[in-house]
Image 1: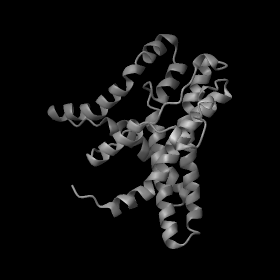
Image 2 (image 1 turned 120 degrees about the vertical axis):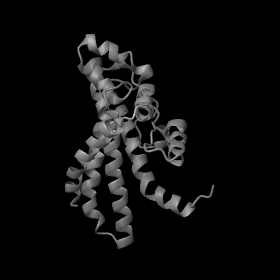
Image 3 (image 1 turned 30 degrees about the vertical axis):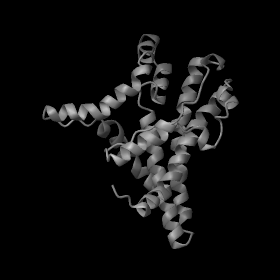
Image 4 (image 1 turned 90 degrees about the vertical axis):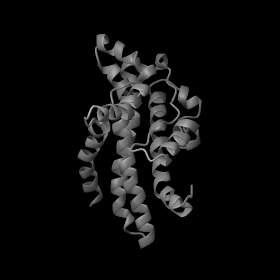
Length: 229
């Protein structure tokens, strides 16, 4: 297999920085919120930091996305090292866990807004630099919105699942919480196996379109408006 290293380098130059910032700040936001609410576990382990190496999971952040990219699958899936949270150390565990879980996607939304606004400044740079910066910023908008939407799916261990567990009454929260060990397998099954099963039945089943791409397409015009395009 021949690799076009120039093309790979160009691809990485406009995607690597937005991806690293989106993942790093997402995880740091979890840790910072937990620290502010009484749990210093993540802080004491050095996870409230902008150092991406503290948040990278070798398999989930590097190997898995790389394999999916080179396999040319329609959706790239990955994950960072989870931030540890000691529920018993939080001031008000149920309420505070909602805030800790929501902090990551909230950070991604903030970064998407900031990236859109910074597009206005990119035009002040020379042409080549302006184009490179604009590509990074638009990729940052896309990646941060994608992370926010994906992580807010109401399925533990995703952030949205933990928010749902905190908000739902006990009779619904407890069964949902027990799904957490199997949540990623359920998600991967929905993403990869349901479309295959649908095609075998002559049906078009595309969970990604319903739960990811439709919300993303609905939100993008607002961020393009912020960016002035």
